[in-house]
Image (cartoon, rainbow, N blue to C red; front, side, top):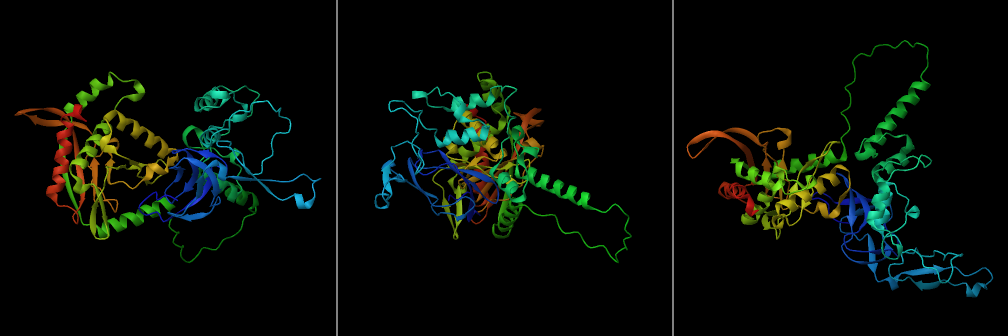
Length: 463
């Protein structure tokens, strides 16, 4: 069970996406885990064959405890039942090694009607099986275009967007694992739930709404039609506070710790972005529409390089001492449409070009808002950025995410009066702020970080 946040102590295994005998590769998604803040896809960090699943779906697992075992394909044993005509003494289980990549569940019988010389389609990998389930595609109806007829990611994605005949069953919207579990607990028919997520996907909040509506309808149907005289109460009871989500409760606890334990200092600097935006405009002329840059990519790339140049602000305060981080893992605060915040991390952000940074921002934003973040996206950041420019605010006075020691904030890019070489004109400006931990650094160190960001943004071609 990976640690998916500084405050995470355990997670709930919602769904296994692999079974014993499946061959998995590094980076494959193997399970779905629910944390107090989100539902996360857990990736495999090794290549091998699943030999044993150590946790069951619905089980709460502490951080650091093993979820499954990997090994060589020959370690997987399948128990084969003996024929009924064989004597009981001869009906002992037989262990049969499963070939590498066979993907056969233990004890599964061989096809009875298959010819000895026929060639079976290569098995569907766990990643493609998961992708097909998410996109509502039946893989048994597809024709693979890969080697020996194997299905590829392109085959599954093409089937998902291909028009379906009128005689086919209606499209089944995607359902998040948490929504599926809530529906099972509350007895809600998912086919009757209107999804409000991306592409009509059903989220947990949709199931809760359907549950509330169902309960109201039942109460209304059972209510007597005759009038009942109600005596006024002496004093109305104070309504209970609205329920707090697990995510909001987690954020509240973490921010309370931050304000109580971290002595913050704040600095700000206004930066002229004329050179950066001119360079971005020229660069976008060379790119496809889907790959074009936005100012946030420049701001994050400059922050990552500055954090590498000022390592005193890139790390964690643990057990009364500052521990610098080996890499710049840049956290990006994302506000979810359903409420709450997530802070996925861009690993090795100081080594990314502006184009690569733009691509990572798009991927993280899409995964976070569709509830499909992966474990590798939630490694503990070494420094975090809060970009509220799209909300129109001038500046951000942030609260540090412990155990980090710094948070950089960006306000809106806006045209304002600005003097350059003694001449007053209108320039695109942005105000950047720093929240620093006074236990780890002083204002002089913080000012070096802000000035380094400014210097880098004045030479965007070097990013």
